Image 1 (cartoon, rainbow, N blue to C red):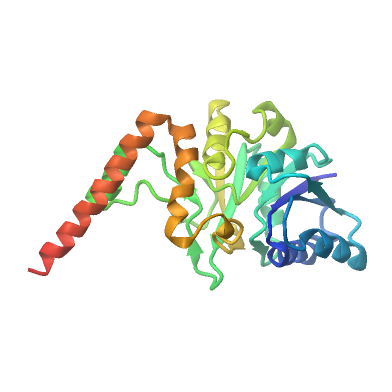
Image 2 (cartoon, rainbow, N blue to C red):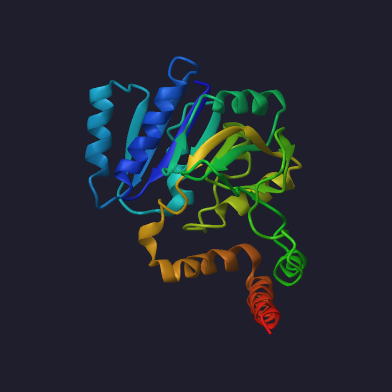
Length: 276
């Protein structure tokens, strides 16, 4: 088996099914792969929908793991890996959709160049570019962005049509060898959701392995669809706090957020001054 595609699902039945259908549409008969869907104890009808579709469509390479609890993104993926037979692993959010078979080109690039991690270019539903690459998450970069208006902290889209090494890629679509994945200890399960991709990339960088952005491969990302039920739109930002503290540590977390908060205030004040 060349590739195991692992999808963690929680209450996103139709979105997950659409993701799976695009995989079969563009990858069938082109590569030996399997799809492993880990359902984190959904309260919707995900398990019935996926199971019925697998039987009706004769998707022998697609399986559903019924997790008895909502273990979160990191642990859910690790559960899927335990049953993965592929030499390489592709972690794919349930709210992703393939639009062609360029994932195969990214896969070949990853193998040929012995990359640590490789990720594609994300697109919004209207096919406009969506940021999926992180710059170094440092206080200095936060200051440059929120006080000096330089794009140095938030996710961005590299201005390139060729593969380039980057600091960190989004965990929404990540390709890694199973050997390297096990070497770094898998996804860090102390993160329930968010910042686990930053932690994964940090682990890969510590082994001096490269992280690549592969823009020729494009995937649609329905941003936030897989986590929209976790909090109201007004409180979405609060979900980041626990994981940010775990990733940065208390001191760095609060220092960066101090910079961001007052940087935003500074920008608003300057905008007001422009009107007088």
